[in-house]
Length: 434
Image 1 (cartoon, rainbow, N blue to C red):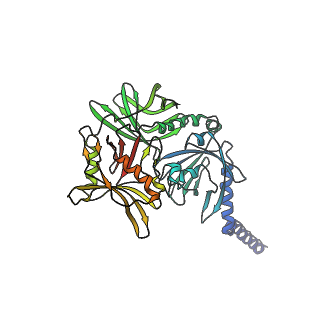
Image 2: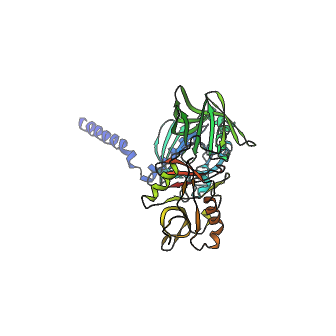
Image 3: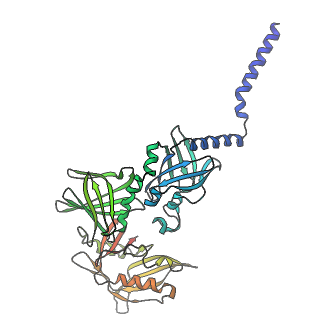
């Protein structure tokens, strides 16, 4: 009897061990399906949806709000612009196993606006947009958040469960009102200013990277401060506050765009302020034009502009990017000399040909005149090449603008980047990089 009991106990123990190991008997397909099901359950389990943030490949932080349902539909808002902040868009999503669980936004949505390869859609470069993914590996699932990583650019997407107040802020127009700040791009002048606490501040906005460059004068010296910005349900927030003596500016709110005057009313630290255009710099950088010219000339190099001139509120106003095989606009200082030994600068269009890049469309300029008040004037010499009919209009308008008698101011925006602004009215400019 003892022997039989002992055998029964051993058999029971063996049976129990087998039962504990049974989860490992599931096949890989079954396990991945269970994982996908758990993620889908998480996505649809938040009644008020998810607050989401995306940091683009160009550095900007964008907010979204997602609501997923079990029918593979997603409803979203975005702070890309006022329309996307005020109009909820429905599109589709899928969860799929591609070696690991992947969330795919598989029809055009507000996320696709950021990643659209047509640069005019989002201000990014043609072919890449703002470098944002549409497919995301699901990295980590927490009780109230999900962390995801883009499969191509490595875009970081974070979802945090929202409450009803978060959803209401989107649905009731609070975010849309805050995005009225973006009307600042409708101010036609390059130079944009507001005053606060007795100080005038000049602002240069880069919407693709969501950064602001501030200039102001303190103690007779021009001060400069650069910071990233983002939006929330209170307004615009500076990533790093601007500190000027006893004044600290953390952001702006209560925006009201005046389309007749092209001005933007707002509040700064609870005080009213107005952003308006100006036709000249707050303090002209007298040496900037010569620095720009000599930086390339001394290196035997050149400056490029992907999209040509911005004029009266229109990017690529002369449609240079529509020239067949256009690659970029080029300015090459001290490119060569004439038969009379005069130094010649080159302005032209570089195109993509079968054998590679080619400079087949060009005009020549005599050495520039640097004025004592910080402008530069480019004396036109001649068109140096045959210009094909399909490029004639764009090129003529470009070199004629370049030849304006009033010349241009230069604003240094980075170690190897400048904006060249028409001194006539500051409503035309071109951005150069090297």
